[in-house]
Length: 139
Image 1 (cartoon, rainbow, N blue to C red):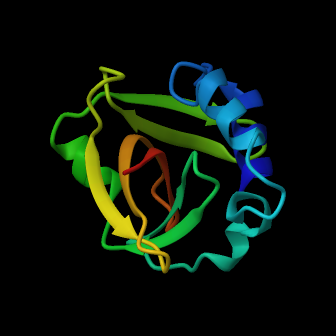
Image 2: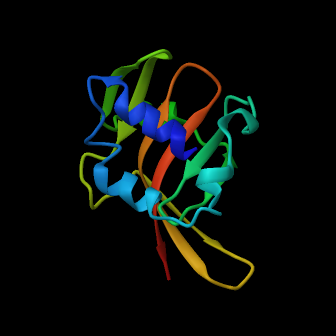
């Protein structure tokens, strides 16, 4: 997933650097090599229109169902249309305010650590795969 994001970040017109920010990319790059963002492959995510992969600054790559980029778009959340070289048109729905996520949820791992995930951007297209771009805050 990390390589997918690097490729998308470097090959969009117009640029999505304000959505896939250098700080977000650096947080991902700094994760341990064993992190899910380095071992999860996009081809293994699934093909349901409501299946998405969530890439988190804590190094996880989570597969989630029943999340739709179009739903945020239909609610009027800011969206940038960009062309991804070699792929085509993609939509990047994102929070207009870096302090306000478009959606949040919490999860608890097997060690009892609760993490709040704040989604600030969604990459999506008319195709079946949606890519969420959240920040994670451990509690």
